[in-house]
Length: 320
Ligand SMILES: Nc1ncnc2c1ncn2[C@@H]1O[C@H](COP(=O)(O)OP(=O)(O)OP(=O)(O)O)[C@@H](O)[C@H]1O
Ligand SMILES: [Mg+2]
Image (cartoon, rainbow, N blue to C red; front, top):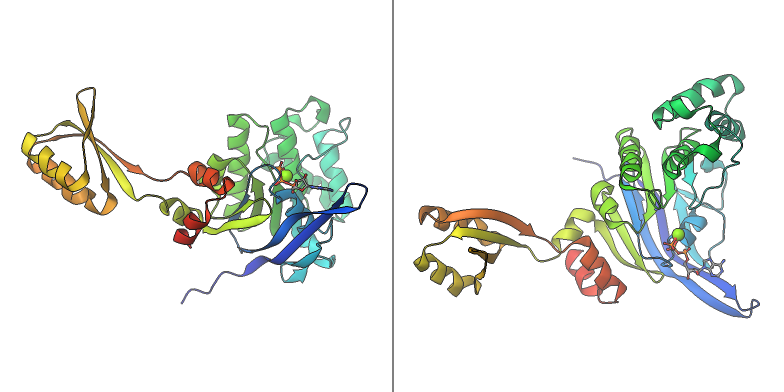
């Protein structure tokens, strides 16, 4: 029997209020959120700007205190410090002293993390190689591109070989090539058995790398679960396009599945997934020409937008 994966992060009823307006008023930013991250997964914490992702991460990193609720990492309350040696962190807008070189900054963080002096040079070279920056090791950070800085940021988070890595918007502000490089690094971390928690609002990256997600909107979790199940919670239908369709078959298909849509000499029909095999069989035996078969899934984006508009409960309910 497969053992259930260990819980690496457990957040329970987390509330965060900030004081605003000279400290007189309170603004509730986290409304009592709960979720968990399991060992070895790439977990996407997804939500629009201002949803509360960074605030949650700051609580997890022990940088701010929650107003209520608990957060545990590796079984430890986040107010403890000892377990942090197993945790790596890339902040949202990392700032690095720009007159240092890539090699110098990683050496600095290696010393800061308490790595034994004799092990530092080897570790730094290994990290530079790992993030593909060996060629720029002696260039000052002020000459680095945004993508290179982000990769140095990830190397910095890995300096002490943590088992859990927290990344706040690791792909934001990068071009498609830079994003792919970071995605590949995240997948490699996953391949090495590390648990990755990433905040993001870039939905295509979520679809490409995350195993599970929690969707946060205005301080409340709207969905937590597998990304594949989340996408399947949309309409399970397939669009079939025919180039040639005998009239008798067209009539019987329209009776069952509704009107055929025609354009450019082609006929398109949306059928439930469970009927696709049967309809294709009928079409082929009637000598119809099948041009394309395209699964129609509610995209993460459309579900995300409906979540933002406050109507995602129904979708989340269907998926969980
Ligand atoms: N120190 C603070 N004082 C008052 N309000 C704050 C403070 N920090 C964050 N907020 C507010 O809390 C809300 C959530 O902010 P947070 O930075 O967690 O969002 P986010 O999901 O990370 O957004 P983004 O995608 O833009 O990074 C926002 O409305 C923000 O203005
Ligand atoms: Mg943020």
